[in-house]
Amino acid sequence: MLHALLLSGFLALNPFQPAPAVPFVAAGPVGSIDACRIYGSIFLETYPHRRAQCFATVYVEPEEAFADVLVYQEDNKLFADKAGFWYFTKARDFADYVLFVTDKRALADFSIQYTKVRSYAGCRAQR
Image 1 (cartoon, rainbow, N blue to C red):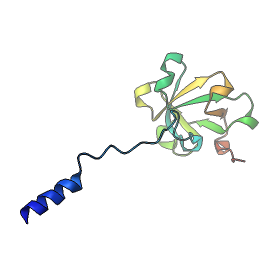
Image 2 (image 1 turned 90 degrees about the vertical axis):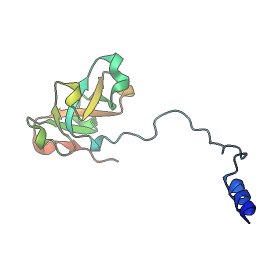
Image 3 (image 1 turned 60 degrees about the vertical axis):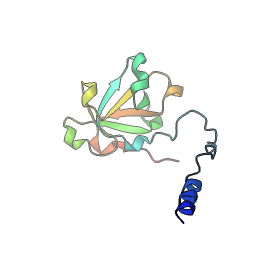
Image 4 (image 1 turned 45 degrees about the horizontal axis):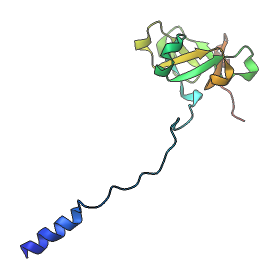
């Protein structure tokens, strides 16, 4: 009886079974970046060698009509609690998000435009 129990336990573990095949997954981003979820303290990185350490890449749009997010610069970090309300930090370590600013629109994940009116800040409706 004991031998049957040990044999069934050994077969259940089956150390001779080959490893399961993992399907090929192409290297790349798992999902797109949702610009509407970025708020709080932000550090804007402009040094190109630190681009890989940044959360996303942004482009400062010259026209408000084409921007994905209208950004209002908050003076207090506590008020930067919704999409488009950003508090800019001078230290990279204290920021919630580190964003790389590029001058090429094609390389950016999303585009921003600064606004001076608080009620205009936020995400634009996705079409």
